[in-house]
Image (tube, rainbow, N blue to C red; front, top):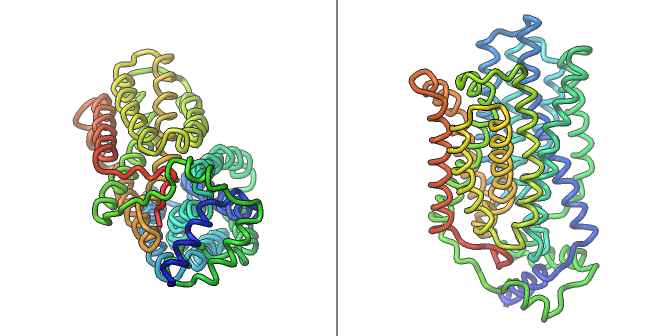
Length: 433
């Protein structure tokens, strides 16, 4: 009887349209994502400032940056277990509390080692936010537009990078790095307060046999009506259930998200160095990198548009394939114009993948009971690769040419595309409970 009631609630939930409660969840998630993006980009600016003023050493800065990556790894794993076992709401509140309080505390750090500790703890919260945020939107969104809303959250999140760059440029030279920690900590506290009454995910409640509580929340999500039977049936068979194999799903998710982050991080972080290796005189490498980064919002927007229109695999696999093609073409460029055009196209592909793989597909590969754990493990492993990449790239540049980096990016992208195509489930508008 309970199983039947749970199935009926799932069907009602799948048929909902966007409601005030959903918009509230989406806005709160997007706000947290912007803060997270701001924090990631703030770290390098702060490290440069503390080194320049003599407040830190190069070795301390390496610990500072590494502690951030370690925190992201730990946070991804912890959020997965707390979110699946204790509930989405608990994980969602804890991660922002950790992130906000330790970022705020970092503003008053008496020395670099205390700041490194604060960075580690804040990054644990940051790693949790990435796992919980996209999964929360996924579980509250109407099934027919689930991909669009998750990808839109990624688009908004990536606006945090240019905003932070502008703030760092305006604030740090005049007032130092501490106001950046102070400001982000205060904004996180405000956001945590606004999240205090965010409801539990109805899909998680149904999966744990708490139908009465789920029904109360679903009724709030139904205030703008539901899809009628004809619309629901025509909406790409939402009754069709994805048959999850946890091991296969974890492999696909790990490969897809790791490849996305490795390719994007390696390219964006090493472009100035790679251009010097290619003997291209660009005068201002930061300006050239900025032109290429204009592909980020374009890619996120394309991903958000296509993900529900043509499906997950038909968005992701061609994006991986084009990443491989443009990576190989980039390696052949010898002019500044060619570098900018190919760099822009590569960046666009990277962020189509960020919007479709990281924000949408990874969470959908797992059933509700294991969604946070699966997403957490996949994201955590990807973070470990991120830690290893600077060492690997630096070694490769010392023994071979910059071209090899782009050949490797292309090979990784092709492998990931093949894995998604042959082993990945198509989850577009399907029952992922």
